[in-house]
Amino acid sequence: LVNGMPLAITKHILKAQKEFINDSKSSMIGRDSLMAPRDQGGIGLFDFEARNEALLLLKAASLAESDTEKRSHWASLALHRLSKTIVKSLSVDEEAKTNLMVQKIKVSQRGPPALHKKMVKCLKKYGLRFETVHPSTELQRAMPLWHHPGEDPRKRQQNNGQKAKCLRRNHTALTHPGLSGLGLHE
Image (cartoon, rainbow, N blue to C red):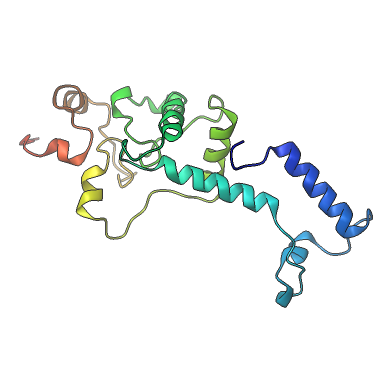
């Protein structure tokens, strides 16, 4: 793992840490209490698991970059690989996949590589999702049309209908600016 720590090493370090702190005996004080700051009665013990999760969340944040020119190469590759492991019941059209980290698309836990799987699991664990209170005009224009994060879950979405397919294939409408000037009518 780049900037991370394999699970086996993490377990080994945690075991060594526990043996050192407890002198190879069973602990009388909980690990959470030991990790608390000194002014709260702890000894400020370093939390390796939290560190590893924080690194995963930082990596996942770079996946959310919508500008492909600014996005790192590894993030583009990771998004491409994750796009191949979308939950089949969603039936997401290939052309509708613009940014999995922003869109309301679920990734399967069976197919992606271990690191990508850990990132998705960590995002779910902490309930991280795309939200904004007052988005800038630039951000609004970069938002995907299909599987939009702000779509109303009570309404049936038209992401895979004939109109949506026509807009994607014939008009390359993938973001909101793609609709401007089309003069859409119901």
